Image (cartoon, rainbow over all chains, first blue to last red; front, top):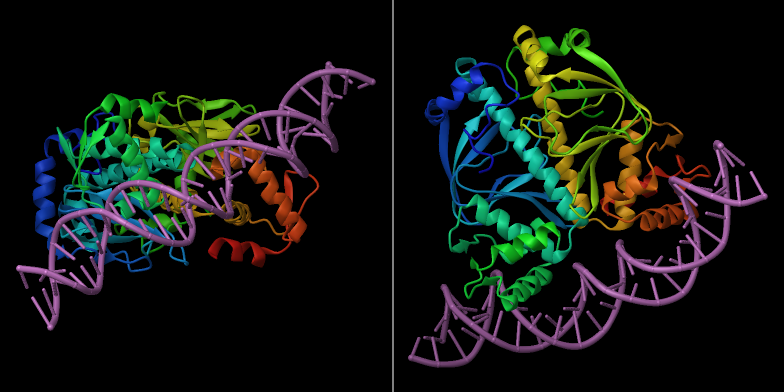
Length: 229
Length: 229
DNA sequence: CGCCAGTTTGACCAAGATCAACGCAAGTGG
DNA sequence: CCACTTGCGTTGATCTTGGTCAAACTGGCG
């Protein structure tokens, strides 16, 4: 899983309390429940903008969120997608460096920075868990930079499909909530290239789909081979 | 600056002790001095490998370090360069996800995870400072992903030159410690493209150089315009 | 002097972008 | 109920950027 509470290893860069927190992660979630407020956003609605005050962070309850970064002329990159249980918007800068938008209808919990700080005094292990989430984000960003700088279009798409299926533990048909444009902006490609590669994979028999938002991974082996070649 | 201690804003995602730590950052450095050991590495020597045990972290004393990520077939991406004062190798996973190598001769301080944990009990603000470094790394990675996915070759090179000059606060001639290959792997280009773009900039008069490792930025305005176009 | 590693330049090529058209399903309004 | 629109997704034709391949250049060093 990804960006979620309670998935740290015992070997974390942590003090002794951490293992306690591990078993007590439900407490953490319960405590967060107390300080959070539920918010809903419509499809394509902005959760926060680049440059906005970074005085809170979020956890996805349902739906999908995209974290975007824009160039002045409108070129866009999606740094990541956040699904149910994922956290986003942790930031130590005053202003947001990225924006967050709802891919479809989304419900999130919003936690203010101030309340989180108070809660950390109560549950010190929370600070560590938040730090872990950031470290996992960073590791993901590093892998993704390798993809963006050195992988071919088919490798990128295959990687995306496998990453998505792993994060949403899809057994058969993979739910793809985002548009082809979003996928393209995540993978550093154009929408046409994403379509074409998917069509090739379909012809090969590695994947199958009729509904563009429901892709069946028929041959994971073939896809995995593409990525690591 | 970048990845260094003592550059957080007052508005950090922090508790009350943080502002105290701000004024007391020298204490932190002194304390780190106690638990760290000095290490030197020769040009191109590996500081740690992908997959190695992540039981320590480092601060650059002198020289330049590159953080690399490799594909099985040898394709390489450099996630970042670390200069004097920068920290690297902070990681919560058991194994390294990336490798670190000396660009030239390098001296670093090595801090074991265990000793750092003990020091955090003594100086709680250290945990926050470490977390801040990670958040700054993440913000940099997000900007860099935008560069890798959506910028043209000239935009990438111009961005690189300006970023480098800002981090090393170069007034006239910019010291470029890394090879053209390293620059290419950092920018997601080939060495030939990097050379060609630099030659074009030179012809334009935006930059000047005879020694490839000493580039003079003659027209920062022109370079800045390239990036934000 | 000749070699070596790194840099630069040129000629050519190809992956993926751009431009354009078409398909298709879900609205919308007459 | 059926034209018409709208928003995506898909496919094809063509073009361009940056990659590949190859050769020349440069400075350091045994």
